[in-house]
Image (cartoon, rainbow, N blue to C red; front, side, top):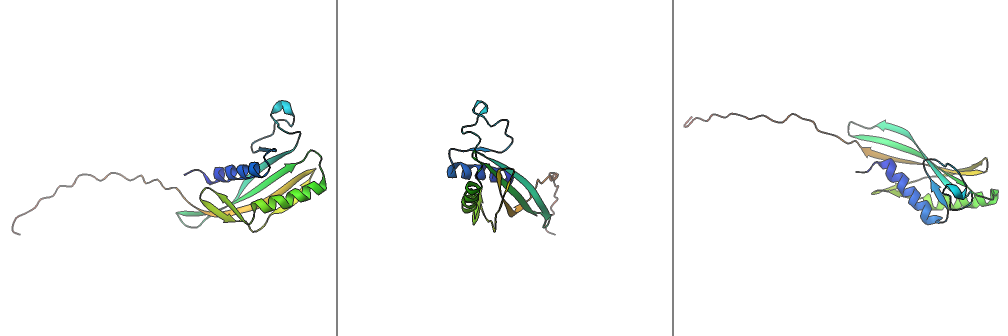
Length: 151
């Protein structure tokens, strides 16, 4: 089974690419924001950051996990009105249910704010994950059986 964090990342990047196909989506780092370094559009992009923030043991088989997701959006013209409209659009594609892998998780709320001319749309995904168990038992040895006739 693929790691849940990678499934979340891939699902979110796919969702953003379908929603806004002409805009670049970055996850690891942005080296530069000009065309010579791989940008398709002039300084309009998404940058996705994920922070696992809750790992609570339920029992020896299950763990509750929470992931804070921050979708940063920078628009070339840096318009506050455009950022407000984009925040509403992002809320509409993320909520009420965010799907990744074979899971469909209800996202109760998103929060949006503009910091240094970048829109940050944040939400938390909470789910229960089964721990992977590896059974490392010693193989059973041979048994010798003696049977008596007539008891």
